[in-house]
Image (tube, rainbow, N blue to C red; front, side):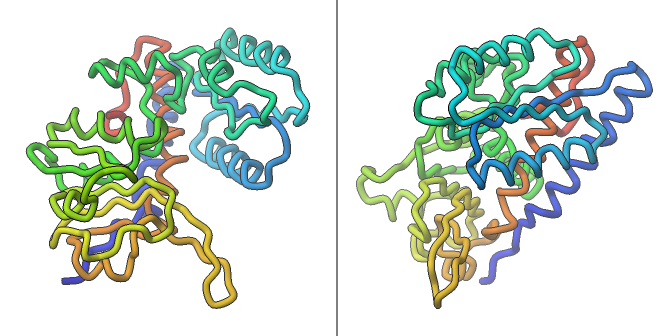
Length: 296
């Protein structure tokens, strides 16, 4: 068996096209342009690249992009004051503070100062609680992207056994909540789980989000399972730097029914879902119907 490849680049392009269509409708029918504000503190190279990409794609789908680049030694008071200003700005529907923040800043305090309705990362404690209790929330972008790809591939997920390897607040926990919401039977596994290989082999859907290069080999994968690899790890191989996932792709692809590659799988979906969340936030702010196919 050779797994079919779930092409995240292609799927993300389709999501962005759907976002662009919704933005056009909001502009033409309601005079509304969704706005996304991104705050970058410091000069972390990876964060700078990510913020540039977000800004470019925001504009490409027709939304308004607001970028705020602050010095690395910006005080917590100044950062909170900026967020308060963005919270009060009616032209801004989504606010994202790029992580990680410099060490002198309290990330939890900063994230929880964002208006939950504008928290398009879905990290605010109110959104975490709403998601956990099955209520309408802003959903973290990476798990939302994984869910969209799974729904597209399978249609209904009802009754499937899903294993999420990883228990982070950003991916593992919200991913489990979303799969529960789609009526999967969900197991959250992690580094201290007993007999992790056996747990993984029971999965119809296996989501790997542990941040360990190629930790999950093919013989941990149930034949025909769908494997969603969230990991993005840089390793040195044959004198070159290479990106690999948390799953050993070559061996897993010989067993799985479908698999996401790294790169080109889950990664492109994260920004696409950030844009989708911004459109959703704009619709909610103005009491308009939410866009179909862009929410959990």
